[in-house]
Length: 170
Image 1 (cartoon, rainbow, N blue to C red):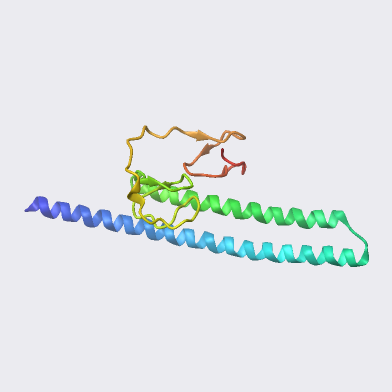
Image 2: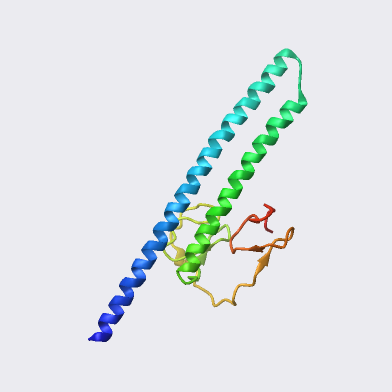
């Protein structure tokens, strides 16, 4: 009988830990997605402003390429900020997964990203996951350390861009 209660206690403890880790992950991801929304609003405003500047210059027949290039560069920096925040989301998700014991994937999305148990949306493309168990889990060798081809920083699995230098991961 004591063995039964120990198993129940372990199950409850595991459930509480999982709920705690998942809720922290959800809060952090929500905060980061809010930051992305804010930067996207800034980007839309900057693009609109650039369009107005170019239109005004065309009307006056006085094109200032430097000013246009500066505005374009500012927009590219906003794109970079969005990518950095998306990388932070992947890092948060990977840390949560690791703290839960490095749960093995149960399948792959059509985009190639790993699908884990209880996953509702793909972390690689955002597509809704209908049935993650469609691909049987395979025995895998321990993952090798991946490093950035540009700066040689260690990369977290599933990262699309280097967290150190911003280079695209191949």
